Structures are given as structure tokens and as C-alpha cells.
Length: 116
Image (cartoon, rainbow, N blue to C red; front, side, top):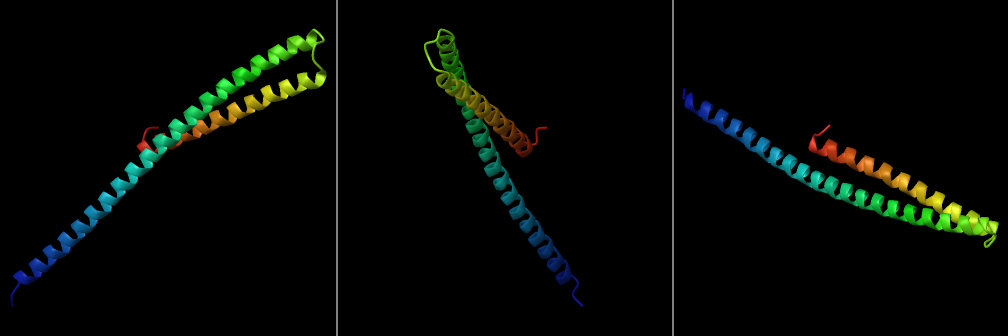
């Protein structure tokens, strides 16, 4: 009986398992690279959105301060004052939502890169 054939078959089987594991590892590494790039892009977009919302809130706050001063002087109506306040408050809510999105994007980025 020839025993060497069994060893060759076992080595081939083991090599096939190693090759399959290497393919799986390469795919996992590629998936991680894609997920990381996506998380970085999402975080950058969320940061830009939050910054834009901050600028919008500052502008709405300035506009409200102007309308408030004019309202106190009797130069604009209560409706104008309420509209300006509503715009300022909507901008504040928008900023809060953007900051929540930024936090979620940061959590995604940290989870993807393994930073906790």
C-alpha cells in the first residue's frame, strides 16, 4: 500500500483551505476599506452640514435681533417678529439635528476603524 498518496491529498486539502481563507481575508479587508472610506465621507459630510447649520443659525439669530429691535421701536408688526423668531428657532432645531447626525457619523467611523 502506498501511504505517500494520502499525505499529498491531505496537503492539497490543507492548501485549498488556506487558499480559501486567504480569499476570504482579502474580501474582508476590501470590505473594511470600503466601509472605512464610506464612514470617513459620511463624517466629513455631516461635519460640513453641521457647520452650515451653525452659520444659518447665526444669520437667523442676527436677523431676529434686528427684527426684535425694530419691533420694540414699533417699526414692524408682531407677525414679522414671530416669523423671525420661528426662523431662528427652526435654524436651532436644524443645527441640533445636524449635530446629532455628526455624532452618529463619528460613532460609525469609530466603530468601523475600531476606535472606541
